[in-house]
Structure formats: C-alpha cells, structure tokens
Amino acid sequence: MKRILDVGCGNEPDRFFPGAITAEANADIDEIDYANFVSLEEPLPIPDGSFDLIWYSFGWHLTDDNDKASIAAELSRVAAKRSTIIFRDYLVIQNWNTGSERRISLATWKKRLMKYFKPLGWNTPELYRGGRHDVLCILPRNWG
Image (cartoon, rainbow, N blue to C red; front, side, top):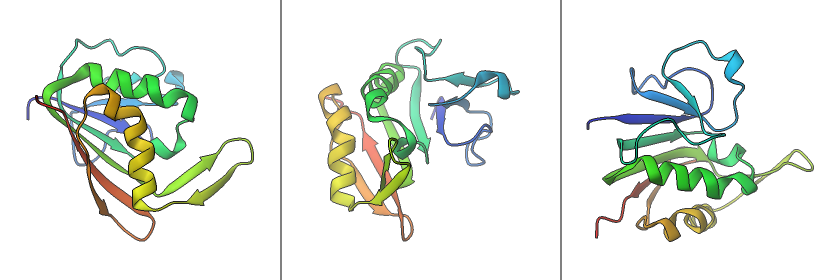
C-alpha cells in the first residue's frame, strides 16, 4: 500500500491507519484541528489516482442520497487503477425527513451501494457481517 484515504465518522484519523489522509463527508472544517483532514463537500485537493486503499468508516449511511453520487465520483477519481474501497457501516437507511432509521439486509445494502459505484467501474463487492447491525464491504476497482 502506498497511500490510504480514511473517510468516515468522527474528526480523528482511524486508529487502524495512523498517518492516513483523512476526509469527512459532512463536516465543519472549523471544528477540525489536525493537518491531514480534507472535506468531501468539495473536490479533494488531491491528484487523480492517489490512493491504493480507501477506508470508509461508519459514514455512508449518514450521507444524504443526493450527495452519494458526487462522493462516489470523487472517491473514484482519487482511487488508483488497482485500488480497493473498504466500507464499514451500519445496515440501516437514514431518513433525514423524519430522523428515523430502518434496518436493511446485506443484499439491499449492496444494491444501494452499487447504484453509485458500478457505473464508475467498480466490481461487485464482497460483504461480511461485521456484527449484529453492521457490514464490512470490500469493493475492488475494475482493473480491466
């Protein structure tokens, strides 16, 4: 691995990847005080194909459906040709109008994720149940 992009929940780098470039999908930059933070609300100030691994931790279910296509496109842009995105997230759908959450199956989670990533050349992911209510998803880049 050359470079890792850590995207996810919270305002500190994930303990699994110290020194990774860190991004937050929905964050107030004024509240963040460490140097490797970037926001996904605008294009990343990072060259195309920069990352071999993108770790997206507990943030996809919190992202509004209207923003998922642009985030998927931006992650695809900064991912190397032979790269992987690993998602760790909850098996829920967040309803922003009511504030409620609804649990979903692994198959439904995969279908909803691939709605955004398949058109961008990503292969079918491998899914693993990470706990009672969460999923670990390994999404490889289409090398062909």
